Image 1 (cartoon, rainbow, N blue to C red):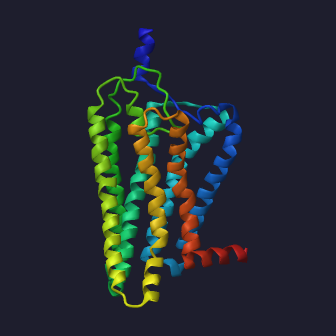
Image 2: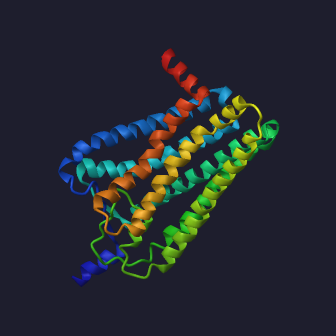
Image 3: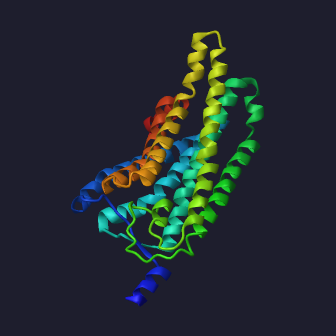
Length: 312
């Protein structure tokens, strides 16, 4: 028993969880999951393809939208394999090293998406408040710099968080709450001191959500103040309508994320199926809905996609 315990702590293996209580119908549950993954992959790939191939869409707003689509693709792929493996083959086992790799991409793309939403809020602020200086402020080189800054921020915040998992000692039955590895979920299972992990996690949360959310709110406060100073109601409506898609993207990203964090921290008595459903909504909702929102609300994207589909 002692040897087994030592092996478990040195080479820990975790058990992922599908939909608790519905294991017998996992194959049927996989059908809607497959549909949602297909919508996310095809929708974001289509948006990316349209922006890359259409010269008329080579503008700052669409560059940021392409970053959002690329991030959503990464977020979808990072959990799709383990989720479908559980639903199809009941393949639940995952090693700590594989878990860390998955968390790197999962949490990394989440941080990236949060940063891209801030960049898009800044884009809308410049476009509405300084329309004559829009192209001089958001040049191609500056957009590349913003993209590189987002990547650097992600790596700097994620790598220490994940490296701190390696020294942890795991001596229990390591059953995770989701169909993928989630940092808060993993450190709960550790038998050793996790204060450093918790502090690092709080710092990461403060430097991402704690910074990004106020930046987005401030951008819209300045946008609203600028728009309300416009005399013409038609111009005010036109200015606000350019922000609808971004507001939708912010809403479907932050609300599920904050809800999942609250359930993990305070919903200790919540049924396991609540954890599972919240976790899947949190990761599937933005990649599925973002391309739909932007295709419906952005005239140039909608027209280009329709033209491409009809010509084929």
